[in-house]
Length: 69
Image (cartoon, rainbow, N blue to C red; front, top):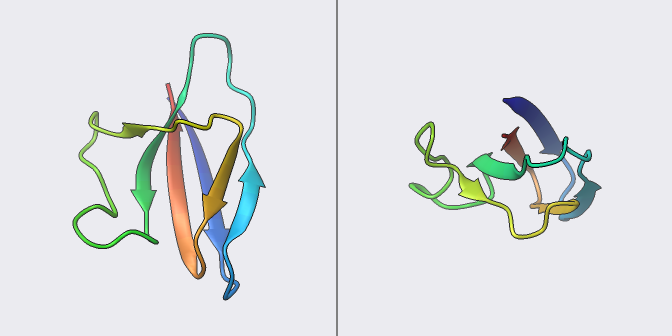
Protein backbone atom coordinates (compact mmCIF):
# COMPACT_ATOMS: atom_id res chain seq x y z
CA UNK A 1 0.00 0.00 0.00
CA UNK A 2 1.01 3.61 -0.57
CA UNK A 3 0.29 6.36 1.96
CA UNK A 4 -0.41 10.06 1.42
CA UNK A 5 -0.64 12.46 4.36
CA UNK A 6 -1.92 16.03 4.12
CA UNK A 7 -1.90 18.56 6.97
CA UNK A 8 -3.80 21.82 6.85
CA UNK A 9 -2.99 24.18 9.73
CA UNK A 10 -4.82 27.13 8.19
CA UNK A 11 -8.22 28.41 9.37
CA UNK A 12 -9.64 27.74 5.88
CA UNK A 13 -10.06 24.51 3.92
CA UNK A 14 -7.48 23.93 1.17
CA UNK A 15 -7.38 21.67 -1.86
CA UNK A 16 -4.53 19.27 -2.51
CA UNK A 17 -3.68 17.59 -5.81
CA UNK A 18 -3.17 13.87 -5.24
CA UNK A 19 -0.27 11.95 -6.73
CA UNK A 20 -1.21 9.65 -9.56
CA UNK A 21 -1.24 6.01 -8.52
CA UNK A 22 -0.11 3.10 -10.68
CA UNK A 23 -2.81 1.74 -12.97
CA UNK A 24 -5.46 -0.27 -11.16
CA UNK A 25 -4.86 1.37 -7.76
CA UNK A 26 -7.14 3.92 -6.07
CA UNK A 27 -7.07 6.28 -3.08
CA UNK A 28 -8.99 5.39 0.10
CA UNK A 29 -9.53 7.61 3.15
CA UNK A 30 -8.19 6.11 6.38
CA UNK A 31 -8.20 9.25 8.60
CA UNK A 32 -9.92 12.61 8.16
CA UNK A 33 -9.82 14.68 11.34
CA UNK A 34 -12.27 17.22 9.87
CA UNK A 35 -15.03 14.65 10.37
CA UNK A 36 -16.78 14.09 13.69
CA UNK A 37 -16.16 10.98 15.79
CA UNK A 38 -16.60 8.10 14.95
CA UNK A 39 -16.37 8.97 11.21
CA UNK A 40 -12.89 10.51 11.54
CA UNK A 41 -11.05 7.16 11.35
CA UNK A 42 -11.86 3.81 9.77
CA UNK A 43 -10.90 0.26 10.56
CA UNK A 44 -7.90 -1.08 8.64
CA UNK A 45 -9.21 -2.67 5.46
CA UNK A 46 -12.52 -0.76 5.70
CA UNK A 47 -11.28 2.57 4.28
CA UNK A 48 -13.66 4.66 2.17
CA UNK A 49 -12.81 4.92 -1.55
CA UNK A 50 -12.50 8.54 -2.70
CA UNK A 51 -14.93 9.51 -5.44
CA UNK A 52 -12.44 12.15 -6.69
CA UNK A 53 -9.08 10.44 -7.28
CA UNK A 54 -7.04 13.50 -8.36
CA UNK A 55 -7.89 16.12 -5.73
CA UNK A 56 -8.91 16.31 -2.07
CA UNK A 57 -10.25 19.18 0.00
CA UNK A 58 -8.70 19.14 3.48
CA UNK A 59 -10.75 20.90 6.12
CA UNK A 60 -9.46 23.73 8.26
CA UNK A 61 -6.99 22.73 10.99
CA UNK A 62 -7.16 19.05 10.12
CA UNK A 63 -5.22 16.14 8.69
CA UNK A 64 -6.00 13.44 6.15
CA UNK A 65 -4.32 10.05 5.71
CA UNK A 66 -5.02 8.24 2.47
CA UNK A 67 -4.08 4.72 1.43
CA UNK A 68 -3.42 3.86 -2.21
CA UNK A 69 -4.11 0.26 -3.05
